Image (cartoon, rainbow, N blue to C red; front, side, top):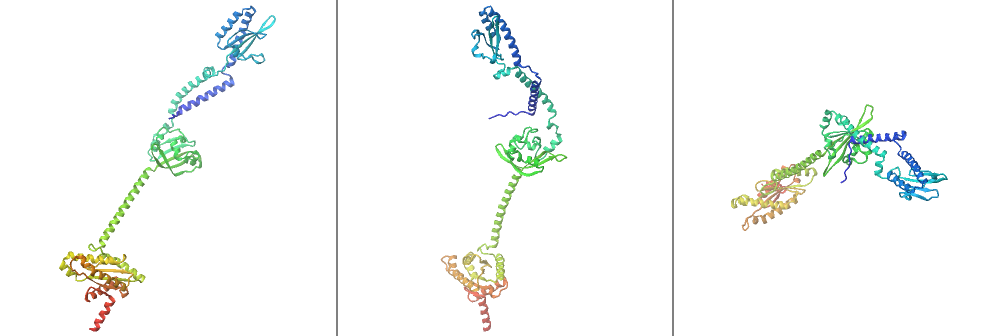
Length: 514
């Protein structure tokens, strides 16, 4: 894991001041020559030492003391570490004495002029030029890092930079403690910003953070440090939420356009957790002349709102489920209230409500509608002979036969104790009478044996048939007509079907005969 070296403001300012001081020092040296030229000093020293050596060697040569001359050369090299090699060469090119690896270090200067590293000193005699002394010196400029550090100019500069940095750092650290921007903000202002429920960040035009309230510092672990003076673009967790392009970041656009940006939704990433959804608002800060000086940025946490919305949605869903359950229960209660407990057919109240709707619809559309009234024959005798339990079974089986014979849209009602009423939308009197006859026959054939197996119980039913075609203008009149036809069927011997129009004809014939 790579560690980043982070310098504080005091360290950065100290380094800047030291660098500036070094620049001024070097500039002054370049213009005024404040620091001595080491090369020039070395040139003068080497010139004087070479000339002195030449005088000494010339005397030895004139006395033919070449052994002493060689010992003198070795003594010079051992005393002066700058001298790499020395040679005494006659004018014919023969080397009469040398010390050091002269062949390696010596380079004959062009034009016979001495250089800083290769010095030529001529030796004269009475006959003319006898020869020359050749001295090879070390280079004056360093080649390795250690040599550069030991070089007087570099060493002095490094020492000044180090001491200057320490002095600047100690001085600025004490001074900036008194000039800390965060300390300059009144406590009441900081407290007011910290009391807000939203995160607040104030930056200058260059993007430096001037103030961050406590809510903002809790938005991310990276915001929990001292932010004053930092650049907002260095908050990687924030730039990851708004985009890496500095020109398109919301606060940059707000300051550039001089207009507020509101309602921008962002997600702040969290280490090892779900991102925090927030609403970002940016308002440029302008002076009296309208010049943008910075930006006020606010962050509204939507996580709690989302949680509350989700909780509300869950509550609404639960209410919908409860509402549906209540509706189902109400439907069940209505079904129980609308249905006869013994037979499962409609109660009289429910039948009349639904029948009224069918009747009005048929009248409006001039359609057909028939009504049947049925009554179990001699039902009292069944109760008296077999008991009420068998009587209830007889009613139940008769109702099952009636419900099995009609269509899904037809209405079957237990109108009284053993009396049933049926409403048949879209069916005329003739078809209704045929249906009544089929039901009568089935009841006669099947219901007796079903109620008491092995017993010769005879269960029959009589029907009266009425239709809107017979002139009934209300539902009550239609039912009354069917009841009248039922009365006729009973008087005619029971176990039969009678139509209301035929019953009227029979009554008319009876009155004439009377």
